[in-house]
Image 1 (tube, rainbow, N blue to C red):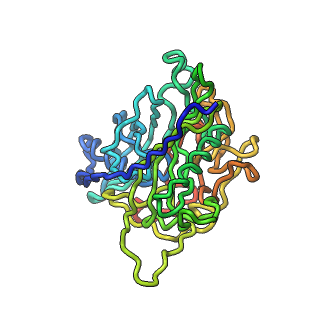
Image 2: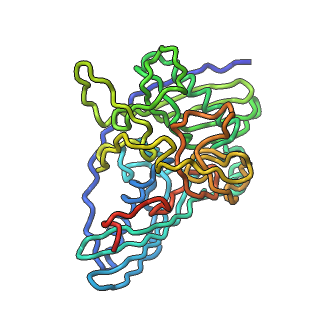
Image 3: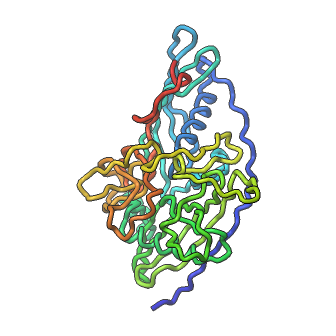
Amino acid sequence: MKGFHIVVLLSSAVLLVSAAPALELVTCSKESGAAAARLTMHRINENHGHGYKFRLQEIQGNKVETVDGGCNLELQLNLLETVCHVINPKHFEDCEIRRESARAVMANCTIKMSVRNTDANVTKYECDTRQVKTNREMVRICPDCPTLHPLNSTEGLKSVNEAVSKFNQNTTNQHYYILKEVGRIKVGYIPSVGMAYYAEFALVETHCPTGSRINPEACKPLCPDRAHHAFCKSTYFRSTGLQSVECEFYPPSNTTALGPGEQEPICRHHVGGHPPHVGAGRPLLGCILPPFGGDGHPPRVGGSHGGPPPHGGDGHVGRHHAGDGHGDQEKQHHRPPFGSKHHFHAFHHFRHCRGSDPALHPICPWPRPWHRPSPRDKD
């Protein structure tokens, strides 16, 4: 019985993106810990190309080692995930921290930094990203609250697939959109309805005109600085299907009109997981990515599940039980197995780090194993 009306709310986000306050000078004094932590938060969010932005919760440790010409710092920071997806141009310091009842996520990070002649550089960081409360703990606190499920949950991806299809039926969009990534999937039980799936996901504009007979999944995304992006939330009931899709749009950072006869530049893929952030001081990402993913290498396939979760590591999916949200997983990648009906556009293949919770987007360690340090990265 289809007793629920499908509503697609397509709201254009008019965002007042304020410039972030200038970064304070980082020195070798113990009192400079706050400035060092703020610089670190900028670097982490700049490098965090998937999932959601993070904000600083507290500084737990600050060690200073004096060396010739300056010092080395080691920080212990606690971070909290915000509700701003990385495609959101809002500065991370202006983003709302996710409430605990909404399945909050935290990260404990160890950061190393060098300070030479008043020039401070983050040289390394590693973070442990996890749910503030595990699924078991949340069930004791709120038995009826939805729990986070792996980002490659079969039924969850089915709900996202239907939501994207519904989104593309909106004829007011100039072009079709394709899935960029799944942000999170929550699952709950409603006595009168059954299992309910609440998904968050990011979309990117393609070159395919709306209304064309092209299968949207075959479309290629526009260049990251020229593409509109959308962040959507959907509700799906297993018994009656898709209930609603609500989306917020973010405009491209490059609105330069094409000249007469000029065509949109061709971009093979976006770099990282997000477009340039308005007001965030990001460089333009350009159109330079090779076919496989963010680093030019094929995505890793790990584990014994036939296709590890694209976002349990650094990406967005995994066929696992919710458990307590803290089980070990093998290296994970961004796609369901080939041949799956939920195998989305190749654009979603990224290189990912190891994550212990397939329901989350972890903060990947930096420098990445495939990152070549620039001279500025070195002491």
